[in-house]
Length: 84
Ligand SMILES: [Zn+2]
Picture 1 (cartoon, protein in one colour):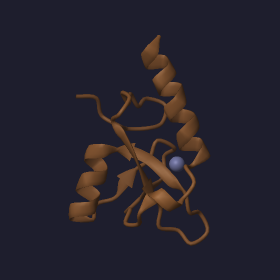
Picture 2 (tube, protein in one colour; picture 1 turned 90 degrees about the vertical axis):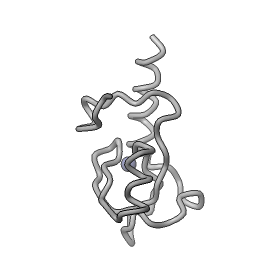
Picture 3 (cartoon, helix red, strand yellow; picture 1 turned 45 degrees about the horizontal axis):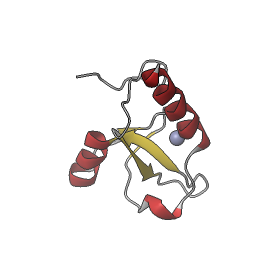
């Protein structure tokens, strides 16, 4: 099972990421993280690492926030690489 370490080395198959919202007051974006990480974060309050490298404990509903442009870029790159 591939481990998500840094944005340079992640391998995220389509459907394996989930947008979650960051906790900051000024940086309210929905970031992409691994689904399993997000699930654990919601249950246990452990921090997650987004595709863009941001680490935080998610808690808010991401649906009302715009997707983090860095995460979107990285995810698109990964999906394109996976498709080739
Ligand atoms: Zn992000």
